[in-house]
Image (cartoon, rainbow, N blue to C red; front, side, top):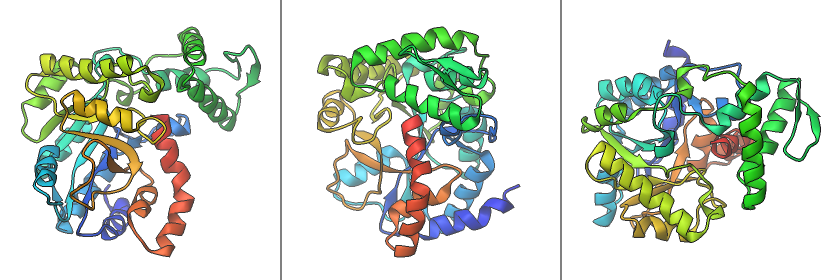
Length: 340
């Protein structure tokens, strides 16, 4: 099953420079769901691809290190050479059931950033609720009262992206109206369709916490666009997620991931709030690698890791040929970040 992936992952890894530390960013780890809407599908990595990637990285003498090891090295003025730090956002159940066995088999440290409000059986996530409801209908009355056709997959994706932009709006009136609309609309949708839509429970998180390979990080309480919040509300998302995780999982929570995490969703104010809330590091979704020891530990860049390898690979290479490939693959990588 791994053979179809081997050439692409070897090519992907060969373009990473040995002087870098790379922080791959994953979300769901499970079988491909070809029935879903594209922005959500792009969040998923198959276990076969993940295993092929880890095996190829090991074969090419890349070291997998923890976030604590990275923070310690940077604090000492040193960039770990030829190193990777695996990070996984949101806290999906399949991180435990499908991803963890691979990390354990290869002795790979990893960090799962948990959104505390998502923890538990039956928790629903708005981007999956929206997708599943749209898949059930051929037309929809939108939050502004207009009725739009959504029979084809292209139309469903267009409506998905339209509503997503409203939910992520900095205008709380637009955001609240869209969320209220979604609450009513999604009642007609089905339940979670696969394990990729289910979230870790507190028992799952405590089980992972016992393994030295696993780091648990914070990913806010409600997964908001932090820049759309007042400073007090944003501070609550940092501090409360840290507090709840420390109470429920035990021990210190030192690492944070910004939801959505691009430049519009996390900036200097958020970096300072992460520092003031007591975290050691915070990661963005902005493409890049760790090249210099004087990097801001609260705006670490990552490499998107999805089934579309080239979108991420090209962000960390210099050749013109690969940059041209990146331009073609960048739209997929961007959708992966913004749908999250």
